[in-house]
Length: 154
Image (cartoon, rainbow, N blue to C red; front, side, top):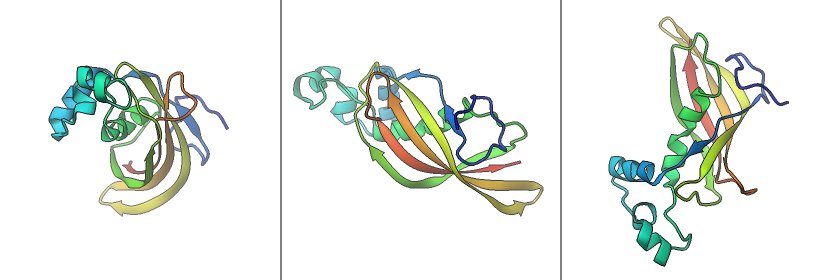
């Protein structure tokens, strides 16, 4: 079932959400490389990547793509009443196709599972399992496919 991007946190399983597009710039690659100490040339050296690399350009770090899940979800899904959200983990991840500098990507979310968590003080919570597909504009094959678990507290 397709839904609007302003759905509340009580939506049923199989709810589908699609984020806005985001341009992944070389500057973002550089900042991520500095933050994570992963300065491999396929991410940070445009000239070398063009001349020697298998993709003809610099490409996004896989973990950069994963780190954007939270951004895409919080800008796509209304979190009315939510006091705190945390990453709980990933069940599986595949980086299916590269994302070169300048490409636009967006996330497709499908809510797979929801289960109540024990109350923590005054906070009630639930664990959500999402199918996440990162689409690269202009390609049929996704950039990334993952199953992501989050916890949110109200």
